[in-house]
Amino acid sequence: MKRKRTLAAIAVAAVIGFAAAGCSSGGSASDKGPVQLTFWSGFTGGDKQAFIDLVDKFNKEHKDINVKYVLQPWDSIAKKLPSAIAAGSGPDIATPDYNVATLLQYANNKLALPLDQLVGPGNTQVAKGILPSSLTDPFSVNGKLYAAPANFATLMLYYNKDLLSKAGIPVPTTMKELQDDAVKLSNGNGQYGIALADHATIAQWPVLIWADGGDLVKNKCSDLNSQATVDSVSTWSKLVRDHKITPTGLAGQDADDLFAAGKAAFEINGPWAAGAYTKAKVNFDVAPVPTGASGKPVTLGSTVPMIVSSSTKYPKQAQEFFAWWLSATSQAQLAKAAAYVPSRTDMADSPAVTSDPLVKAFTAQVPNARLYLPTEKDFSKIDVDIFTPAIQAATQNGDAASALKSASDQLNQVLGCK
Image (cartoon, rainbow, N blue to C red; front, side, top):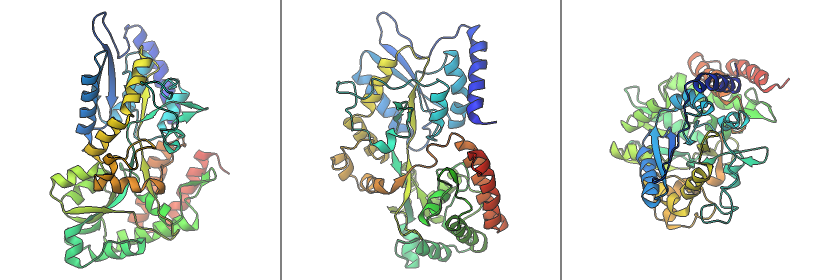
């Protein structure tokens, strides 16, 4: 069953079930106190404290609005949020998923409000043109904006300076160099050339495929069976299988833990990982993702949609919170605390970016960044049920071409492409 239908079914069931219980929306206000907004967030990783501190700052600066910040795992939010909103018992604000395409389901099922008052000339609005189109386009449905970016990040190549120095290896600039280095730095005794996750992770394999000119979807049909995609996956899966450059079956957190333990020389990851690696005392640095067969630099752009619940009683105050979140001051704080790229077009030369080498490095990758399946309504099915098993089959069983051919047929069925 498509997830879109699942959301709709959950929503209808919740309305019936909760209506009898007389549940109310997440926000509340008294005659004497501030408007209370509840915010469900899935940012439970290394960047957690940065988001907590930002919400605390908002509450200190606003006497008429108070935001209650509730952290939950992403899978918990995905299960509970649709029905809670439909029943009127959910939060006023939420990050429904870390996948951009999930927003389409919330908009189409009328679980998220269009942000009609967010963009404008007012003091509690964001000026037109400040938000980059690379973020607003995926957050828009039928010409209406339905989400604000909770964050914005790019991926870079993390490398262990000590491991590379010991082996006399310079930082790779091409995929061929990265592949050769990964083989040299895998010693068969617990040290791996790269920590490469294949499930429950930020997109890593798609970046490798893009670098070689391949893709998952092109012109509304599968590109998994194209020569560029097959060649890229075949090359990488052979290195995984025959040269043991990474353990197989790694989830994203497993890959992070491997690099944090000093047991992997490379990892493709976002700025949120830097704090954990610093705490683990890894001597690391970052570099652009190496160029592949395409000859063009490319990386992943990552953003999490932040929505206003359709059941909130306070849409104006919620959008005021969004505008404050997207202000230059707030984006500077988020950049400093978590190395996130500011979600604004006017901050590339600001001290928040130029004074921090890590923020500056990740910001410099914005022109090369692209989102992962940002408009595919069946994102979860494509990513989890089709693409991930294909990569796992290629790395474990050795026949990348057959795995991708089967996956391509499945993908075309989902896409309705004949």
